[in-house]
Image (cartoon, one colour):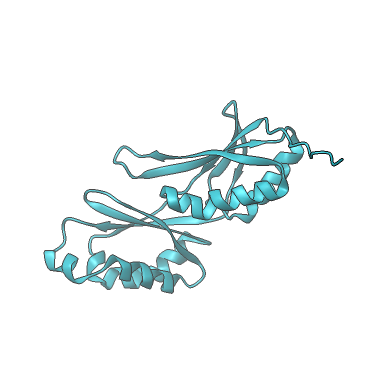
Length: 192
């Protein structure tokens, strides 16, 4: 007779606070889905929930992924190796059930390109395409960054790019955003 393998007990509550401005589907694609697979493969835990924290204006502030892990430091050490491979934004952190920071993690820097959605001439909105903006910027970034997510508000749209260097990403896209009509009145800010 075969013995049934005993399922490990996942009792250690850990929250991954991602310093990334990611819509739920993007959080899933870049982080939650790969984390679910890696935890299952390692046999050390499982994802128990996800969330998004919003700013007062409704834009994304940060997001999180809650996990239950096996008890002990060994499971935490394995989790840190898994997270290192996911290339999180700088300023992300692991937090225990009591709200204490376990570790600050992350290597990516973030660039938000805010596009004005209400103050440009009407023909600019009719003749220009934000998909063209995304395509051109991804081409210009050429391996040093890429679009991770976006947010569309009542008067602005934000495109969130993450990569190795904010300054390098900014330098590569500035000539384009300074010339393309839809990018008039844009603003750029570092978000990680």
